[in-house]
Image 1 (cartoon, rainbow, N blue to C red):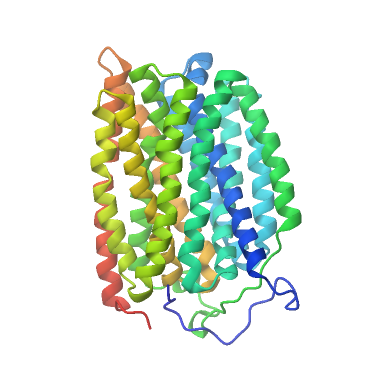
Image 2: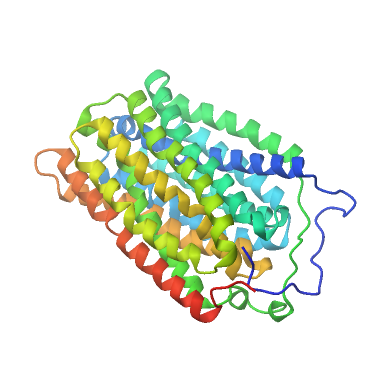
Amino acid sequence: MTNTFEPGTLPATPAIPAEKPISNAYRTYVLVALAVVGFMCSVDKVVISMFMEPIKKEFLLTDTQLGLMTGLAFSLLGGLVSVPLARMADRGNRKWIIFLSFAVWTLMTGVSGMATSFMFLLAARIGVGVGEAGCVPATHSMLGDYYPRALRGRAYAAHFSGVYLGMLGGMLGGGILVQTVGWRLGFIWLGVAGMIMALIFHFTVREPLRVDQPPPSTLGKSIWTQLGDLRCFFMLVFAFAFVGLAGAVAAWLPSYFERAFKMTPMAIGLGLGLGIGLASGIGALVGGQLTVRYAKGSRTWGARYSAWVSWGVLIPLIGSFYVPNPIVAMALLFVAFGVAGTLAGPVFGTVQDLVAPQARATAVAIIGVVGVVIGQGMGPLCVGVLSDMLQTGGDVGGLRLSMTIVALINLFTGLFFWLLSRRIGRVYGDTPA
């Protein structure tokens, strides 16, 4: 996708010596390594969804407390620290930021298994959220320098396929762990595995040169100037926030299937891992190919495509809450998350297209803050609060209705993407320069 800014004339400070050329094979290795980091980030984030029911029983928690632990408390502080970490990534060594973030969140994942109370576990999960905050912005910035513009949509999609496959790993692996060794040892084992992977990443990945130079018009300017047209940028921010808010129902799907169909954790983990994780990973790869093919000739294509996808996925998603058969429900989820997964390439390709090169990580972080706090933070909590309010003698009906209400917020996601496409066309024109 063509960036709307013209290349500048002042070189950025090189992060590695120019005499070390990056081969295609090594560039692919780095992409795989970053996908593995994203995989573990997703595993440690979603695995608690598979542990929710035994944790609820051990600590005698309400659905509101579960929503707080998996949503707002986990996301709020992490979202806030992501912006300064992103500014560091735009100016400093991104490899070190990713490595240290990886090490911190895996350490806190292991500590989660040692919790003796709800507040202890809540604090540990906040630590996981803070650790993960530095990973995504630095990763996007690094990929932007390893891959040329024409291939970035595909690279981001490949990275997100790792993230989505982490949902498969977290749900399937979490189901196996909770049914075999319990949630405490499950957290500890994940912490040890993550620390080993963090060390491998640190010793095998190097920091790339910053190949896209800042345009002269943005040098010395504030970050708001570097974000391009602010109306475009904030339309994208709110669209992403509503994506996260509606998609937060996924955190409650393990509990829903256990309560509605009395399924075992392993069966739930396998079904949801395939229906959410694998489907989203396949969708991300498809979305990357679509972006490379169609977005290169249209700046507005990504936003328009995202609008129609946001509206279309509601049919299979909400339908999965009401069918009486768990296999049919899983199949509908596979369709919903497979289609939704195609958004990764178009959305983040659009981000790269609109902002200055030296603001990439910060732009992703700002989008992430709003998406994490409003979406991932408020979403699970809203579902939990509504579920407690709507209980009528059983805990399935209230949970189903609360998930439906929150999922319908995706109508606003499509609206913001559609408005964004029109704004991009007016400000930048549809055809890239």
